[in-house]
Length: 235
Image (cartoon, rainbow, N blue to C red; front, side):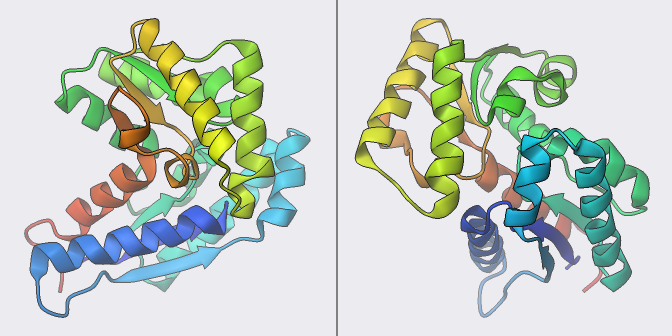
């Protein structure tokens, strides 16, 4: 089994889910008392979020690349960044590594394509929904048409993430509002909706909506398990 490296803490609420999914899936596939081999570094999101708000992406990239190098030096054989938004600096992290960097948007794109979906809705932070770094992966590598909510709804989705979900607050009214926004994407032709923030699956479930949801936290973690258990991996 290969060792999986996680750069987490953004937020820790969803990083917990990575750890749970990785171990549950390894146990499911291998049986017995098996669990995943994991190295994790968890950043203080309270220090990163102000940099995000100020658009200081170069500093964010330097911080996260340094954490990724630590994981590789410690024996990680792949690295995952446990957040969608920070994949804006994925190129910076990849440049520092010799081991594979497993991109979260690739995990989403592969899942969408496997379901025959060509038009997908995307929810996430403003950066994820409005900038090209994430949508471009889905569009150019997987041939997907990507739909995002109108500007006012994008603002509401973003605010709920930072004001509630990253703080472990899950409100029924926010769940209902997200469901309404997802329904709007469906009415515009979305055949599935990418939950492009690792906290959103903590709030919205399949049973809350009438369109397939693609949980990027779970898809990313499962891709890491695929990599770790590839035939020929070291034990």
